[in-house]
Length: 322
Ligand SMILES: [Zn+2]
Image (cartoon, rainbow, N blue to C red; front, side, top):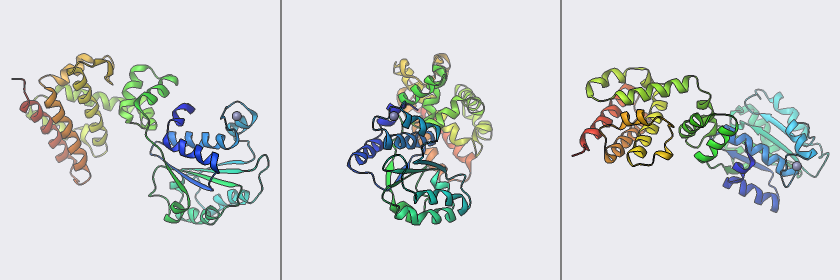
């Protein structure tokens, strides 16, 4: 990930401020986007030793290679028993070799089990003055309250679609795929990247696109509602895709074709939006939002599927062009 993207994050600004004023002994970097969390941890470890984060000097190079004697990486997802944590804790006690501080990074700290977290706790509470811990987590719920309360929380902002688009195209993803993936990612690069890598995600998207093009009358609904798009596993993704398509249909209807996420699919989008007014599309988008809320309570996904499909048809009917 490009450092400039990380620099925009308000969490990064807070961390930089601490670096200037005096680094705390423990930070918990929290974000749902695992790639962003990892990049933040990586650049933060560089910043502790190379103020310009040049990525070229011997110090930056050795951190990148994992050979810097005062930087340690651990993956909470791979630490299962207390013996997995102990080697790291032993190194905490040893004085820094090259500079005046040591940095211990634990990715996926929320995946550490209770035994490992408890083992970590004592050191985490009162590390020697030269030590800083940087924990990465997708959320707070997997962390013990005692760990949570001892670290300074850095909540990551989600990325902009433009930043995700830049990341994906710089890595060689074609523009059309990157644009759609960025829309699907909704601020989450990890999610967008999975989508851009195609396979099942892309197939699913095409299935939903087809359904949205063909959905014209209520007699079709019963069949769609029990289909692949609305299984328990797929319904969340299907709603995301429906939202992307209806939002794009809206942009097309309002004449801002330049910003659609589905690049070069204007004719298909016209089929999705045919018969809709802007007010109708707005109401259809509301039906999707309502379906998401229902999913938090309903067990029966078929009911939610029926509701959202009827909601879309009703929106088209109710706000017909006069
Ligand atoms: Zn450097």
